[in-house]
Image 1: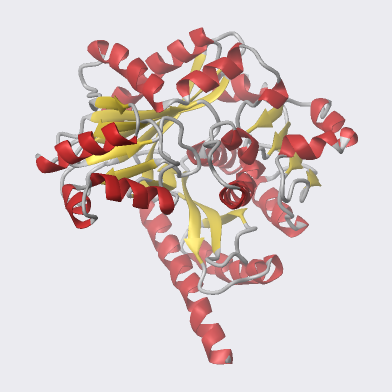
Image 2: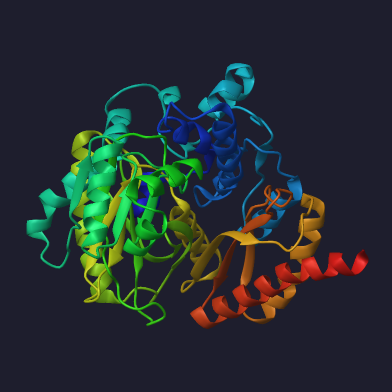
Length: 444
């Protein structure tokens, strides 16, 4: 099998391991307290629900949180999977690697599952070597920026934001204050930030309102937006123009590096980002105009060639923002699976089993109006499913374990043949989720 699917799975059914927490743990600040680390672990275990769709057709699923079988059967019907072996609830308060140390039979099943074993990302549990070294190097936002800067002269359609490294909190505060005094908005980044943690956009108004840059940085640490005091990156904010202008703002290019080091493009998608927090993506025909897609792909392939030379194998993506002239500006590279990867996988599978032309939109954390058990959440979505179908959209559940959190959410994918159908189904689902709160209020 040619193309990215062949490079990714060899066309075989795969073993999917939801080791999001394991991957993130490599980059968490060692000064985090136990409570903070447990919150990050729990968030990552919810997000590991994405492991259901690491590849077009799983044979075995290994999930840290408990996932009821009905959810997998729902996906299997829609995506025409064969029988799927499910192992869930394997790592409630620990990483997958730690849990597998006590479950040698399951570890053996992963190693000899009859197909490739796919992980969210490379960790020491898969062994040291050039692949892990490449991950550790280029997951650094400083190293990624250096890579982008080196490639930029050969890509005149791409601009790279200026970045400086502030060695210590005092210098970070001084430089942030200097920039604010000149009216400049700044993107403050931890060198290693994962899971929506470690990046924040700071406006001059926010600096002044907080009583100065140092006071603002302290508050961001207390609020767990930034890690405890340490070296920070201060990056130029790329102004994309007024909100709501219909412009492309946040783009992703995804690709797979095969075992032979060849880079296989997967696609370009438009991400939904709230501030600096990724919310989801839309992929498929016509989502990104051809000119912008070609510029982003050329640069992404050049990045992939450097990653391959450094030893990386498997999935990666490059994230971009666009400026007022719609020039893409690369912001980070991820040497792992990401939320958009799942959308691309779903699109490929649906095109194969239902015919070409699908658009897929993922909605990673739709708020629910009430806390729901998995059984109640299933009934809720099952009631909305036929309504979405009448709009021309298919509902695919992805993250179903966060419905009973203090701020309950659900992660879904929608598939359709037009953005109008996606928009309508998203609005219908949002209204249905919001109505849950009114329904429970009426029962009081």
